[in-house]
Figure: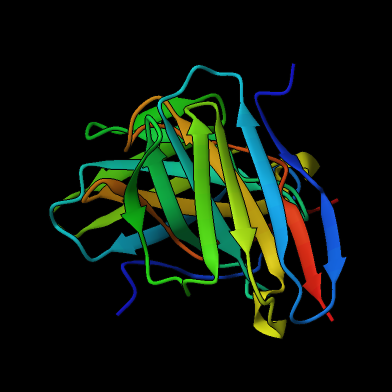
Length: 108
Length: 112
Protein backbone atom coordinates (compact mmCIF):
# COMPACT_ATOMS: atom_id res chain seq x y z
CA UNK A 1 0.00 0.00 0.00
CA UNK A 2 1.33 3.45 -0.89
CA UNK A 3 2.04 5.76 2.04
CA UNK A 4 0.01 8.59 0.54
CA UNK A 5 -2.83 7.84 -1.87
CA UNK A 6 -4.89 10.18 -4.01
CA UNK A 7 -7.56 9.78 -6.68
CA UNK A 8 -5.68 10.79 -9.83
CA UNK A 9 -8.81 12.28 -11.45
CA UNK A 10 -9.21 14.20 -13.62
CA UNK A 11 -11.99 16.08 -11.87
CA UNK A 12 -13.71 18.12 -14.57
CA UNK A 13 -15.33 21.11 -12.90
CA UNK A 14 -17.45 23.85 -14.47
CA UNK A 15 -16.22 27.34 -13.71
CA UNK A 16 -17.88 28.61 -10.52
CA UNK A 17 -18.60 25.15 -9.14
CA UNK A 18 -17.21 23.50 -6.02
CA UNK A 19 -14.88 20.52 -6.09
CA UNK A 20 -13.53 18.45 -3.22
CA UNK A 21 -11.18 15.52 -3.02
CA UNK A 22 -9.39 13.50 -0.39
CA UNK A 23 -6.04 11.98 0.29
CA UNK A 24 -5.40 9.04 2.60
CA UNK A 25 -2.18 8.33 4.44
CA UNK A 26 -0.97 5.13 6.07
CA UNK A 27 1.37 6.32 8.81
CA UNK A 28 -0.60 7.16 11.95
CA UNK A 29 2.48 8.92 13.36
CA UNK A 30 2.38 11.52 10.60
CA UNK A 31 2.99 14.93 12.06
CA UNK A 32 2.11 17.56 9.52
CA UNK A 33 0.18 17.83 6.32
CA UNK A 34 0.19 20.08 3.29
CA UNK A 35 -1.46 20.63 -0.06
CA UNK A 36 0.83 21.61 -2.91
CA UNK A 37 -0.19 22.66 -6.38
CA UNK A 38 1.72 21.71 -9.51
CA UNK A 39 1.04 23.23 -12.91
CA UNK A 40 2.00 21.36 -16.07
CA UNK A 41 5.79 21.27 -16.51
CA UNK A 42 6.35 23.45 -13.44
CA UNK A 43 7.59 22.92 -9.92
CA UNK A 44 5.26 22.12 -7.00
CA UNK A 45 4.27 25.14 -4.90
CA UNK A 46 2.76 25.18 -1.44
CA UNK A 47 -0.96 25.89 -1.53
CA UNK A 48 -1.66 25.56 2.18
CA UNK A 49 -0.74 23.74 5.34
CA UNK A 50 -3.44 21.61 6.94
CA UNK A 51 -4.15 22.15 10.61
CA UNK A 52 -5.93 19.81 13.00
CA UNK A 53 -8.88 22.14 13.37
CA UNK A 54 -9.22 22.64 9.63
CA UNK A 55 -8.33 25.86 7.90
CA UNK A 56 -9.48 28.11 5.12
CA UNK A 57 -7.56 30.33 2.75
CA UNK A 58 -9.89 32.29 0.51
CA UNK A 59 -11.75 29.81 -1.69
CA UNK A 60 -9.73 26.85 -0.40
CA UNK A 61 -10.61 24.80 2.67
CA UNK A 62 -8.47 22.00 4.05
CA UNK A 63 -9.55 19.44 6.64
CA UNK A 64 -7.69 16.77 8.56
CA UNK A 65 -9.31 13.61 9.94
CA UNK A 66 -6.72 11.84 12.06
CA UNK A 67 -9.05 9.04 13.11
CA UNK A 68 -9.67 7.99 9.51
CA UNK A 69 -6.24 9.15 8.34
CA UNK A 70 -7.23 11.41 5.52
CA UNK A 71 -7.02 15.05 4.54
CA UNK A 72 -9.29 16.86 2.17
CA UNK A 73 -9.23 19.93 -0.04
CA UNK A 74 -12.30 21.84 -1.13
CA UNK A 75 -12.22 24.56 -3.77
CA UNK A 76 -15.21 26.90 -3.97
CA UNK A 77 -16.17 29.12 -6.90
CA UNK A 78 -13.62 27.40 -9.17
CA UNK A 79 -11.62 29.59 -11.55
CA UNK A 80 -10.01 28.54 -14.80
CA UNK A 81 -6.66 29.25 -13.14
CA UNK A 82 -7.37 26.55 -10.54
CA UNK A 83 -6.69 23.91 -13.22
CA UNK A 84 -3.65 22.05 -11.94
CA UNK A 85 -2.55 18.90 -10.16
CA UNK A 86 -2.97 19.03 -6.39
CA UNK A 87 -0.42 17.09 -4.40
CA UNK A 88 -1.15 15.81 -0.93
CA UNK A 89 1.97 15.87 1.25
CA UNK A 90 2.47 14.17 4.61
CA UNK A 91 5.40 14.65 6.95
CA UNK A 92 6.52 11.55 8.81
CA UNK A 93 9.86 10.23 10.05
CA UNK A 94 11.74 13.34 9.01
CA UNK A 95 10.65 13.45 5.41
CA UNK A 96 7.79 14.61 3.26
CA UNK A 97 5.86 11.92 1.39
CA UNK A 98 4.10 13.14 -1.74
CA UNK A 99 0.97 11.67 -3.21
CA UNK A 100 0.83 11.20 -6.98
CA UNK A 101 -1.60 14.10 -7.28
CA UNK A 102 -5.21 14.77 -8.20
CA UNK A 103 -5.74 16.55 -11.50
CA UNK A 104 -8.40 19.25 -11.59
CA UNK A 105 -9.60 20.71 -14.88
CA UNK A 106 -11.87 23.75 -14.66
CA UNK A 107 -13.89 24.31 -17.83
CA UNK A 108 -15.60 27.49 -19.04
CA UNK B 1 15.62 37.16 -6.82
CA UNK B 2 15.09 33.46 -7.54
CA UNK B 3 14.77 31.55 -4.27
CA UNK B 4 15.82 28.09 -5.48
CA UNK B 5 17.61 27.86 -8.80
CA UNK B 6 18.79 24.87 -10.79
CA UNK B 7 21.01 24.51 -13.82
CA UNK B 8 20.64 23.36 -16.45
CA UNK B 9 16.91 23.51 -17.12
CA UNK B 10 17.15 20.90 -19.89
CA UNK B 11 19.75 18.20 -20.33
CA UNK B 12 19.82 15.79 -23.26
CA UNK B 13 22.60 13.24 -23.26
CA UNK B 14 23.62 9.81 -24.42
CA UNK B 15 23.49 6.63 -22.37
CA UNK B 16 26.70 6.00 -20.48
CA UNK B 17 27.63 9.67 -20.06
CA UNK B 18 28.26 11.40 -16.73
CA UNK B 19 26.40 14.62 -15.96
CA UNK B 20 25.85 17.06 -13.10
CA UNK B 21 22.93 19.23 -12.04
CA UNK B 22 23.50 22.21 -9.78
CA UNK B 23 21.18 23.73 -7.20
CA UNK B 24 21.45 26.89 -5.15
CA UNK B 25 19.08 28.49 -2.63
CA UNK B 26 19.28 32.04 -1.30
CA UNK B 27 16.65 31.58 1.41
CA UNK B 28 19.10 30.84 4.20
CA UNK B 29 17.53 27.41 4.69
CA UNK B 30 19.35 24.61 6.48
CA UNK B 31 17.88 21.68 4.57
CA UNK B 32 18.04 20.83 0.89
CA UNK B 33 16.60 17.95 -1.13
CA UNK B 34 16.71 16.21 -4.47
CA UNK B 35 13.54 14.68 -5.90
CA UNK B 36 12.89 12.69 -9.06
CA UNK B 37 9.58 13.01 -10.89
CA UNK B 38 9.09 10.34 -13.52
CA UNK B 39 6.67 10.12 -16.43
CA UNK B 40 3.89 8.97 -14.08
CA UNK B 41 4.32 12.28 -12.22
CA UNK B 42 5.15 10.60 -8.92
CA UNK B 43 7.54 12.81 -6.92
CA UNK B 44 10.03 10.68 -5.02
CA UNK B 45 12.68 11.90 -2.63
CA UNK B 46 16.24 10.85 -3.38
CA UNK B 47 18.44 12.71 -0.92
CA UNK B 48 18.24 15.26 1.85
CA UNK B 49 21.03 17.32 3.39
CA UNK B 50 20.87 19.35 6.57
CA UNK B 51 23.70 21.83 7.01
CA UNK B 52 25.87 19.94 4.52
CA UNK B 53 25.26 16.60 6.25
CA UNK B 54 23.45 13.78 4.44
CA UNK B 55 20.33 12.86 6.42
CA UNK B 56 18.16 11.01 3.93
CA UNK B 57 19.49 8.63 1.34
CA UNK B 58 16.65 6.69 -0.23
CA UNK B 59 17.18 3.56 -2.29
CA UNK B 60 18.93 5.24 -5.16
CA UNK B 61 21.59 3.60 -7.37
CA UNK B 62 25.08 4.61 -6.28
CA UNK B 63 25.58 6.10 -9.74
CA UNK B 64 23.85 9.12 -8.15
CA UNK B 65 26.09 11.11 -5.85
CA UNK B 66 24.98 14.31 -4.15
CA UNK B 67 27.48 16.90 -2.96
CA UNK B 68 26.87 19.86 -0.68
CA UNK B 69 29.85 22.25 -0.65
CA UNK B 70 27.94 24.60 1.67
CA UNK B 71 24.41 24.80 3.00
CA UNK B 72 23.25 26.97 0.10
CA UNK B 73 24.28 24.47 -2.57
CA UNK B 74 23.38 20.87 -3.31
CA UNK B 75 24.61 19.37 -6.55
CA UNK B 76 23.77 16.01 -8.07
CA UNK B 77 26.24 14.03 -10.12
CA UNK B 78 25.07 11.05 -12.16
CA UNK B 79 27.49 8.50 -13.58
CA UNK B 80 26.86 6.10 -16.45
CA UNK B 81 23.46 7.47 -17.34
CA UNK B 82 20.73 4.97 -18.24
CA UNK B 83 17.49 5.34 -20.19
CA UNK B 84 15.50 4.95 -16.97
CA UNK B 85 17.17 8.04 -15.52
CA UNK B 86 15.10 10.20 -17.86
CA UNK B 87 12.87 12.30 -15.61
CA UNK B 88 12.50 15.76 -14.13
CA UNK B 89 14.79 16.33 -11.16
CA UNK B 90 13.69 18.92 -8.62
CA UNK B 91 15.82 20.52 -5.98
CA UNK B 92 14.06 21.92 -2.91
CA UNK B 93 14.92 23.58 0.37
CA UNK B 94 13.25 24.14 3.72
CA UNK B 95 14.12 25.93 6.93
CA UNK B 96 14.08 22.62 8.76
CA UNK B 97 12.98 19.10 7.89
CA UNK B 98 9.22 18.69 7.88
CA UNK B 99 8.47 22.31 7.13
CA UNK B 100 7.29 23.88 3.91
CA UNK B 101 9.61 23.14 1.01
CA UNK B 102 10.43 25.54 -1.79
CA UNK B 103 11.18 23.93 -5.12
CA UNK B 104 13.49 24.89 -7.94
CA UNK B 105 12.14 24.98 -11.52
CA UNK B 106 13.35 21.46 -12.27
CA UNK B 107 15.88 19.93 -14.66
CA UNK B 108 14.36 17.86 -17.45
CA UNK B 109 16.85 15.08 -18.16
CA UNK B 110 16.50 13.01 -21.32
CA UNK B 111 18.81 10.07 -21.85
CA UNK B 112 18.97 8.79 -25.43
